[in-house]
Image 1 (cartoon, helix red, strand yellow):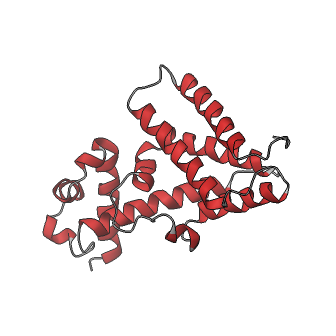
Image 2: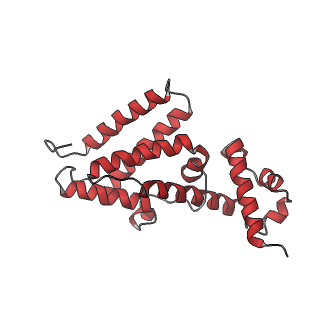
Length: 197
């Protein structure tokens, strides 16, 4: 008897393979079905439409990112944020297609600022906000809302990844050095004057 989950898993594996080989522009239902060894119509027995497939890929990317974020260790909240952003870069460089699935796929269920984040739909942003609030309570960050600081850090990280992908840095070493410098300045811009960094 045909196992429905096996069919779905096969399609999902095929979609990840197409994404890895051809990137977001090459991710079509036809190519995924061909890679899975089935007709496009048979694929719709497992995913209602392309949006459902994109949402599943995005969720898989977010699961990977959340696992990475939960492994970040640092007692100091600012150090934790710095290590998280370093992990973000590592994720972008070592698992680019899963990173793209999480952060660049045009998925219909992508989290929207600010409502989804205020509602706690992003575990990683929630973790960031806890550390930001901790740093604020310690007198190290000013009164900017934690979500605004988290958004600034996320946007900066994604911006650097986009620039890296476009070949705007001469090397990964330069990319990381400039990123760390920008991260330091970004966090400093939210700091209380005269507070320890």
